[in-house]
Image (cartoon, rainbow, N blue to C red; front, side):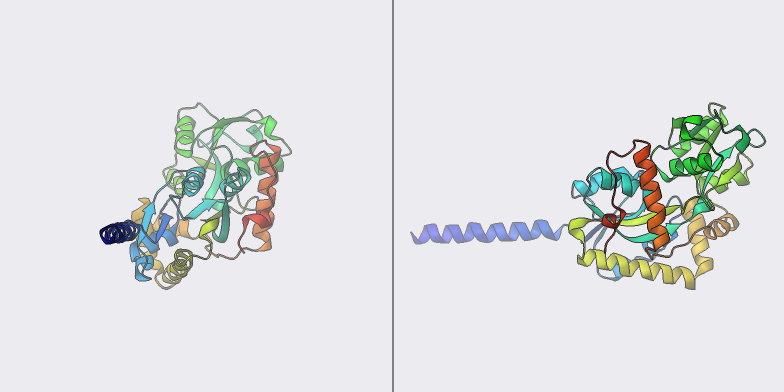
Length: 305
């Protein structure tokens, strides 16, 4: 009997040791690191290691699209998406993903633009034009606002669903008349005189990106550390603008002068203002009307707190 008890205690003890060893290998925080399109605070945090400085064992992950981030969250493989497009957050929320946006990451209306090959297209040519862009994104929303500004509807243009690099290639080969592109592709190709800006997002969209968390990670130490590290990154950006430009130029593979001009297009104010909410409500209405989401989204339910 005593032997059986001792054996049971031994097995239980080994189980605890193994379990603690497995959990010890788990990072404190799994967060996205996407330096593109021009996510300077993320570049700074990654370079300066502010999260590690706060005692966090961090796992960085890179994703090419917002839906991939929320899929990883649903699979419990990602805690925070540092940067997610406003429209991507809406689409994910409408699809039932249990996420909350807890701060604005950036606003940059001029970082999105309808472009064409130089001298070959104008807004007067918009009706009937083939336009390449990634469907269900800020780029798509911008085109809708441009079309509306011209007194047209989305039925008046032929939408070609392409990721930005593919849209640029299709534009250069003449397969489409225009494309909606984002930074830093926009500045790089404009400087090389390969494209001409027809209309950017100024006065039409906010060009919003958000920081998004898995709902069950709300209030966790990793989330609080992320917010503190982000504040440190913004302070570092303000105190070291020249170094920030150097870092951004290297990460984005841009000349420093172009990186400095590009940085001027961005606001990294984190406040969730009424204007932010209003822009997202309009974007959500557009996505619903276009059939890109099947149910309307309560924008207040998207945000925390």
